[in-house]
Image (cartoon, rainbow, N blue to C red; front, side, top):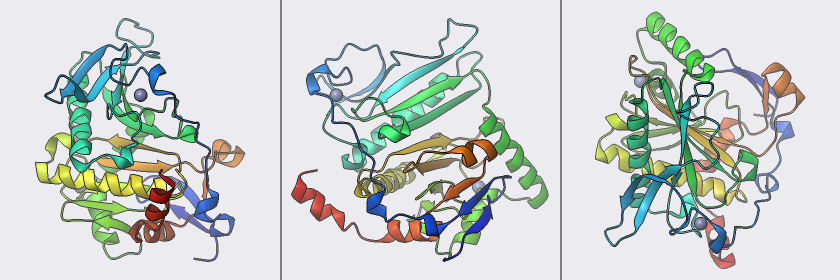
Amino acid sequence: MKKSEIRKHYFLDKYVIVSPKRAKRPHETKVAKEERHKKDDCFMCPGGKVKVIYEIKDGKGGWLVRSIKNIYPALSLDNKYAYGKQEVIIETPDHSKDIHELSIEQLKKILSVYEERTESLSKIKGICYVLVFKNEGGRAGESINHAHSQVIALSMVPPVIQEEVVAIEKYMMDNHECPYCKVMKDEKKSPRVAWEDKNIFILCPFASEFPYEAWILPKRHLGSLHDMTEDEKTSLARALKHITRKLYSLDDLSYNYFFHNSLPENNHHMLLRVTPRPNVWAGLELGSGVIINAIPPEDAAKFYKAKLKSQVKNLVLGR
Ligand SMILES: [Zn+2]
Ligand SMILES: [Zn+2]
């Protein structure tokens, strides 16, 4: 792809200008990451003063993954003007490890805490939607350097979700098919497939809004983690490991990921969307909602498919 192209989302009214001329080489997308905090002033490390809500124990008196009360919540259950709940999921007791360095077993434990917290928070009266997300790196909004994700329980279905729900309902009505199942079928042989195994499909979507954007989708039509078999969860952990390692190899690129689950009353396909953040959105993006993306998804998929060259270099540098 040499010329710019205006591309439309598969089923939403969203547009992106894929403009490879503006592309920087991957290693130039470097984002400075603040130095890791010293271990002794980190409240997420074992021994930190936190209010534990849920945890998976290690059987030796310690824990492997835990969910704690957010120390500075914007929402709380005792504030009727900003009703909701926020938790922080600490992904490992080890301060020195990033998510891409964790084992498949550990990643599966993190997924099981995502699942448990989503289920539990969904049962609270007045809670309409639970979002699990991760901010990795300074530009993606991460403020503390111990590996963690977040959960927010909201008293409304947020507009982004509502817009998707309406579009999916319409699509299913018109086409008698799930749009994500259809996208996977249509894209199966396209150059935008980034990774797949028997359970999980990773796609760099046609109208990617972000450089190296990736959609992680279960191949079966499932609404959330709760519907997955053990084998599918293992595949999902592998997929997450693959994507996060690759993003780390791009000079520790900042990214977000988040789960869009089906609402209980719908039968929609779940999506784990990974949105890397090499650049800050400017006037065009904020003023028009039209996004410029300098990395065509076909190139992004090629990048995810390629062997990790930088691994050896990073090992030598002790990263
Ligand atoms: Zn720590
Ligand atoms: Zn589906």
